[in-house]
Length: 241
Ligand SMILES: Nc1nc2c(c(=O)[nH]1)N[C@H]1C(S)=C(S)[C@@H](COP(=O)(O)O)O[C@H]1N2
Ligand SMILES: [Mo]
Image 1 (cartoon, protein in one colour):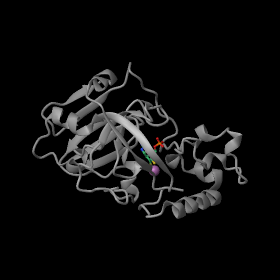
Image 2: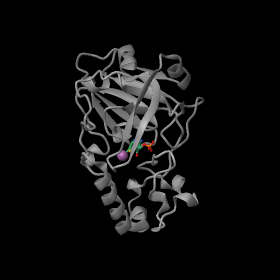
Image 3: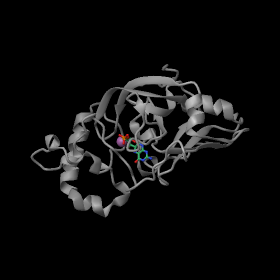
Image 4: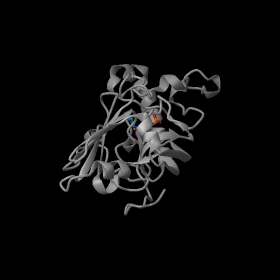
């Protein structure tokens, strides 16, 4: 039932294969593998989403997104208790509150979101602080070559090379679809890596650590590309906001 390891030029067959896999595995498969659990419960309920299989939870929600989480429940955080730590190979480690992040210059990026499972949501606005801004403020040491991301779900991790992290279309995002990011979508703060598959965009972001090499993230240790470029992405960088 997992996402496919590599992106496909055409997402549709992947989606179909995933659906068939889910049909075969059934709900018992989900229950037996809690570490792969996706948050489909939020999508249930609407009769308009029911199909002949009855697997309403596998259908996209009305916005076209699915809610994914590798853990069953994630603590809620808001302006009163959210904190983002930047540390590792930097001269000025520090913690940002939500208010700190909101006070910094905000950048808006509008691209298609694409998951390796085959679903895609066109023209989705994300807005927040450029990751490069936070890295510059922290003062990356010469031996800092990569960035590792951790999350307050206590489990998910991601990574970028320093070159990727410094692109202008990589955000520490506070808004999604022009509203504060909801808890289900990884709020109050998630990473948004516009040129890559959505698994790179870590939800519930709580830590940014500069490292001397890329440390593969959660899905990357399970077969995903460390470089999760979308088809047709401008890999040279500065694709702009
Ligand atoms: N912390 C965390 N971040 C995560 C994930 C996750 O399970 N946990 N799933 C990834 C994957 S595979 C996708 S497609 C997107 C899904 O984001 P959404 O739930 O907002 O649609 O989040 C990515 N970031
Ligand atoms: Mo995904």
